[in-house]
Length: 205
Image 1 (cartoon, rainbow, N blue to C red):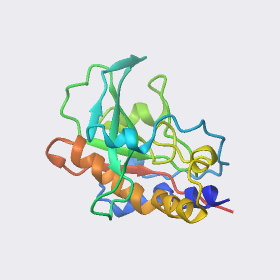
Image 2 (cartoon, helix red, strand yellow; image 1 turned 135 degrees about the vertical axis):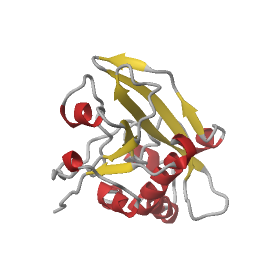
Image 3 (cartoon, one colour; image 1 turned 120 degrees about the vertical axis):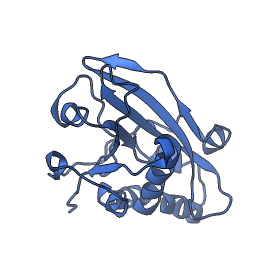
Image 4 (cartoon, helix red, strand yellow; image 1 turned 30 degrees about the vertical axis):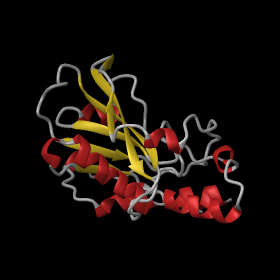
């Protein structure tokens, strides 16, 4: 129940606190109710993330009419602390094929949920195809989801104290997700320029 409650807080609506300049075709907000799926056990520890560089970029790979590149960021578990362990936050960069080096503005997409990773486009279609006409799209797996450091019953079971579990869960709320996005902008966008934000709003029971 604690995991579910924490992830409910981590909605993309909080990203509206970031600077954005959303074009007309992205103005619609999709509403969706979904249950938290069972995630696989934690594949890497926070200590391993701490040893990583702040930003690691993969190589470009292709799907029909799109090019994609994976990024991993070692972000603070607690952005408000002076010294803290780090966790991994994963993001996938998507551009139209042939525009890998084009000077495109960035668009950050924040998946709703709660508890779901960003889309995994296998071809140019839907809103991703439209967005890639003008933008370099960044698909963020919010902390605790997807290929980011996961938040699961399995990972929580590694923390034996209930008090420490609660303290750990507090770091997966929307406030830190927004700060993760800002960390990514500063480390990914050339000259740390402003970007556009596209997100989902979720109505929860």
